Length: 523
Picture 1 (cartoon, rainbow, N blue to C red):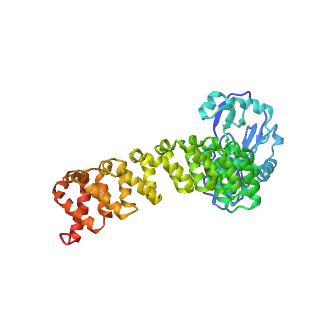
Picture 2: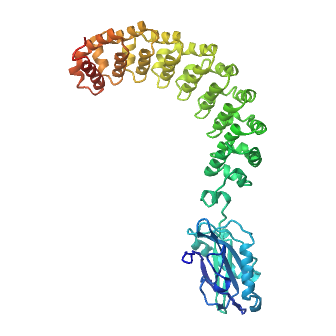
Picture 3: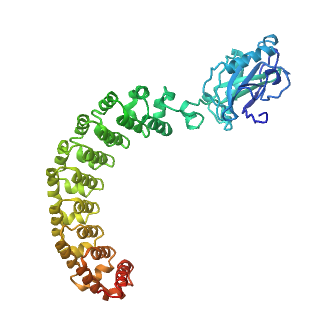
């Protein structure tokens, strides 16, 4: 224990002063009962040297207390700093100093401060008043030059005190003492908390911090009603700003999920007339989505209705499109007719938009039959254009995969006669694959594959094409037994040529595998 290292960082500057004729005896470490096993350890620092002689010419003493942490078995750093001014020799007897030091250390008047040293993990300090003379004399320590040398601003030097004065020299100790908040202690793993009641008075600060916000989120799931009420009382006045905050938005989301009915109603009132604005904001859109997801129907409809007149703008926004998607996923379609109406005449521009194509797919998934029909009329009329579009092809694939049988048949029929051309297209080839794999009838699938195999010269072109080769593989996988054999017979003569082409290697490997399994030849 006695071998523990005590690191005390003192920045000492020597300046010329007028000198003082008063003298005082400095108590030694022994006279202060210096013992590492004590919970609070007083230590005298004088003129930057804790081991100075017991008697020197002194005007002021800098007394430091160190708190010992039994749990971690180490000193947690500077704890209390008390400045004791001696006006004459008799006013500074050893016993009085010891008494005042121990009183200062154990009085519990701690403020959150850290001495400017990276080797100290925690420091809490309190200061007694200095005499006017000492303060004036010590002002030399806070010169711009010295502040620059210390790497601090003059305003950040929170105490600067004469520690020793002789007839010719005044010695000053200047140090910057930044305040450590409860949040900083938590972030630095200096303090841990079991529940939300322990951060009372600091909730707003925690809510805006990455780690603090995460702590609140975790605790909200199991917090008592009283704890939630205390937390909400602290953030209510800033809830609107927290909705748009990088970390604060998650705390608001948790209240929509786990808050009481009155708390949720208060948040809904704050959303009033702000839904559209928040929907376009990076973090606010998440709050709106959570509200739509968690609110009861009446409040849900009230929130969603604020988007009326702004639907298309939201759909084409990188944040707003997620809000419109959430509307389709969570709200009864009866209350979303205003969204479908806003899509009329805009379905193709939206379907070919990077965000709009997602919204159209969600609409086709969750809208009622009548609403879907209104959207599909525009989509089907523009089938050939949409299948070749970078984003529109996803809408067409979605209909082929999840749509009604009649819609899938109509799309396939509209593409008949263009299948070989579309199979060689980067985007349309994906739609042709879906036409084959999700074809509603066997007869129609047979016709699609037959069209692809119709001309010998076109067949070779498709087999070695970077996109069409995948269509042909899908055709071989989905063909019935008879048509599959016919495909193998017609592909086999082209194998020597196909082996030369990079994009044909997958089809060659597939054909070789089938021939191997069939014993060398299809029976």
